[in-house]
Structure formats: C-alpha cells, structure tokens
Image (tube, rainbow, N blue to C red; front, side):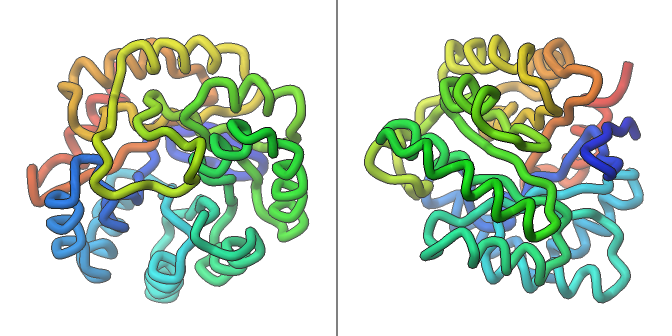
Length: 260
C-alpha cells in the first residue's frame, strides 16, 4: 500500500469511503434500501477488518450517531483503521459533529461538502472559518469538502485547513439545501470532473479525491486511470464499495488505484 502524510498521520492512498455504510448510494432510493439492509454493523466491521489485511488504514464516514457508535465498537474490539469524519448538516451545530467524532476516535473532521457548497452559494462563507477553528481546537485534523470548484478557490485563500476533500462531480444543487437528497435525479457530468481536477493541481495541502467512480457510473479501469493521472504525490482517493454487487470489489479497486 502507498501512503501520504496528513499532519502527523500516515494515511493510506486508498481510503475506504463510508457513504454506502450510511445507505447513500447516489443511485436512487432502491439502491439506498439495498445498502441499508446489507450494511449491518457486523458487516461493516468485517469490511474494515478485510481492509486492514490490504493495509488500508483510513476510512472516511459521516459523524452521525450510527457511525460514531460503530467506530467506537470497532476500535474497542482492537480495530486499527483511522477515521476521518465529516460534519452532519442535519445536526443543530458543528459541535454535535465534533462530539461524535471524538466519541468514535476520529483523527480528523471536515466540513460536509454540501454545507460548504450551500454556504458559498448563499454568501455565508464567512461562517466557515469558525467551523475550522472549532475542529482544530478539539485536537482534530481539519478539512473542507465540496462539489463546487469555487469552494476551493475561496478556501485556499481563506481557510487554514489540513486537507481538502474534492468531489469529481457536482450532482445535486445545494443552493436551497445543504443535505443529500435521497431520490434526486443526480447528474454526473464529465465537465464537472475536468473543472475540479483543474483546481486540485494548485491546492496547497493534501487533496482527497472522491466520487471518482461517479457512484458506479464510470467503468472502473477508466475511472482509476483518470484518478492516477491527476493524483499528486501527497494526495489520496476515497472509494466506497458494495461487496453485495461484487465480492472482491475492495481488492480489485485497491489494485486498480495502486498498481504501477
């Protein structure tokens, strides 16, 4: 496994994505429900243990009560994978997200991509630095995610973060709602991907590339070839898996990302 450096932490270049564990498929409510039924706590912990055997040492997953408890249980049973979490737009304040991150043993927390998009779209970006400050005061690595390249144009000049989470696609408008909308007719456009990688090359901190497979819409070999072309030396990629569809998906995706 290849690794990058984020603060004082060594992070695997392949990061396991937690959206499927929270039934966020980006493929419609029917697939969301399949994920909800498949990803029991025991199933997720089994996947985490399998990821450990492949030297994956980091997961990115929501900072909600479900994932926080799951990660607490996994670490209490001897699990070694590090957790980077994201704030939850449904919580009343960022403090709740930070509390969940600390309970579950997270090493870092980033502003949810939809939240960042929403704040920028509504002229509320001046509220974001305080969120970053709160995350850092809690002793966590601080980051910002986003689907809109303009978020990162602004963030690189105005935020003191440890990492950026850059989505290749901008599938849902966030002008009126920061949260993911289950069942929305999501759009995954090639021009969005091209616009984001053009921004990534100039960002001053490690970038975690995510939604790189367009939620399974892009053929994996093509998708990972594109990622590797744009992955800088100290960047990583966040990949969600659904083993019910393909049992060896984790191993195959790791190989596609890391093989020469």
